[in-house]
Length: 198
Image (cartoon, rainbow, N blue to C red; front, top):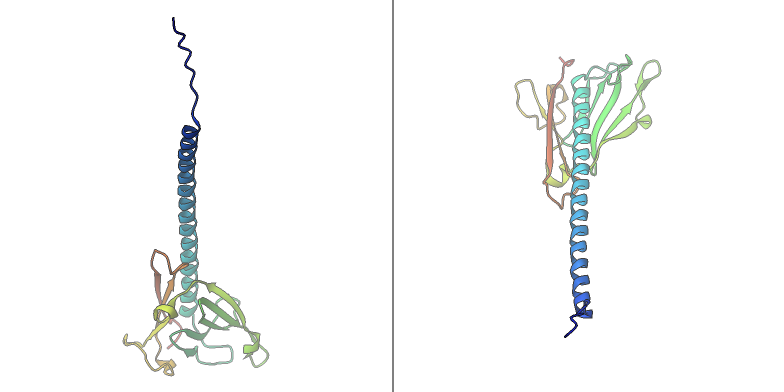
């Protein structure tokens, strides 16, 4: 009678192969989780940049729409170009007209505000308070004008010294948190007709 007491364990080679397969499976799971987390984080960041840009463009359009004569009697529009516009508006509803400037500085869409002071009222540009309205702006990189101006008949204004012809402003903001990665640039558009300029 033969005893069939064949209790065999894993050989060293089988153990190494099993360990290698286990490490490969765990590594694949970890890489998948990292990739999913990175993609989700990027999507959240891109959505946040787009939301910031949307809020910024809405604020700019609202302020432009309320353009009015300055406290010192100056014309409502001070200057305009494809990357900036300077005008007077009571954007904070304090019954005083502020000098407001929206402009592009690098990849930041910024707002500068100067309060009127003194008697007669004056606007000291040295007191301008600048804040970032939106970042990750790519208008300059892709050649899209931030501001486009139109007269009362809807014709585009090309001579930016004709401030008294301005009746309508189109604002285009192109944003992308990581331009080297998909998705492509996201463009927001909004417009404002100047209500208080005759």
